[in-house]
Length: 113
Image 1: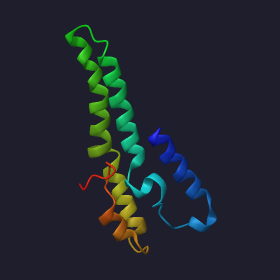
Image 2: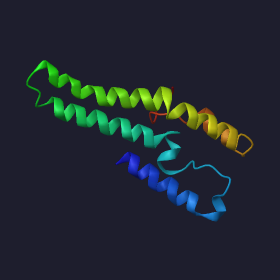
Image 3: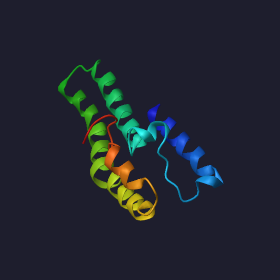
């Protein structure tokens, strides 16, 4: 749900010609610089926890591989690192961007790090 809302807000924002060259900083994007990734991680953790509730043997713990892999990919590899680099290169001269970076959590809403 969070991922869908974030994607919808960004799509709507980018579809307006008045936002050309600007970055989104309202809606869920005001609370996290990557709310779509946060939503994806929460979704997979939720699915794993739900699946674990019906686990019957030790092999059922493999259900946690997917959310762990998702976190690894998004946080350390193909998600946040290249996105942050692109954002910083693209918006570095836009008014308010540095303040947005300084005051908006990178992933987890309301989390100071």
